[in-house]
Length: 374
View 1: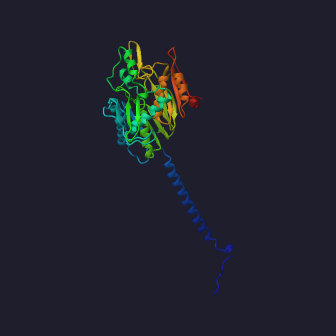
View 2 (view 1 turned 90 degrees about the vertical axis):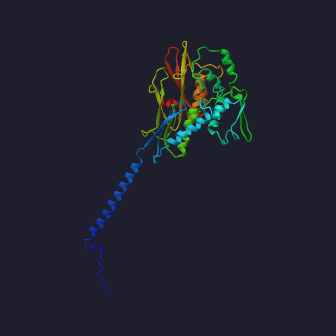
View 3 (view 1 turned 135 degrees about the horizontal axis):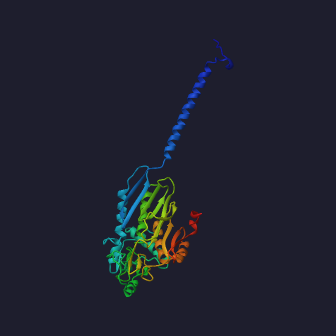
């Protein structure tokens, strides 16, 4: 039996519209798919929802702003973390690790620790502040000194009764200075690490480290939960990561270092791109006696509140603990020595506001910040 085969050029034209319709349908379905895919992609690019956790700690506020696609509330964990830190480094808690050392006559057993780099079996918050304090003490030639606590209490800025010194006793100041110096504290390393003091009155003070360390501890906590965007703020000490609530790099303002100035009054602002910042100054925490002003920044070498032309020191560094210690160091050193000191610290920038004799102010800053003033 034979079949009639029609050459392709002679096939009925009615088959052509069917082929065209199938192609059109396929194209339309593909187009719709692409539109849906782009729509999903665009929705993923929308700014994430930010969560704010805030409260009180270390005599000030804390505020943590972070973005989390899972919408997790870390308020309980963050608050507990700060409580744990205070239980080790707060001089206002009698049972804290640092208070137990300060109250001890000779020594305190602080658990197993082999070296500065080895993990501690306990008191890890205390150790982190201790080692950083010792590091900056050595780098600054003693301008930063965690054993300044006896003098802090004398001048009325410590954990003892808050009071203004109405009459300075130079003999008392000189006597207390004999208790100051990190050489007055020694470590005995063995199975148990024993922290010893050369005299019963030797005391440690981590107030120039605590807030910065708290910021870093919270940042580390968020990093461990894979949070990509956050700003941690404890009393104005801050550390950032990723993008802000506006979808751009986080920005911080430098307050006007003037009595009566509101915190909203700023001199300038800077981007804070995956960095930490701390500002130290005496323009808010001071008292006045018979026309003389006494700030809370003490010079370990003299035993007296430091008075120099540096009104505020803002330090940028990767870790807030580091920036915290360096900013205090700058306030002790004064503008010229402080600028030289900061320029020797790798990965660190600084912005100083300096008082002139006529009452006006000027600014100085490290080379790394020049690009923000072009």
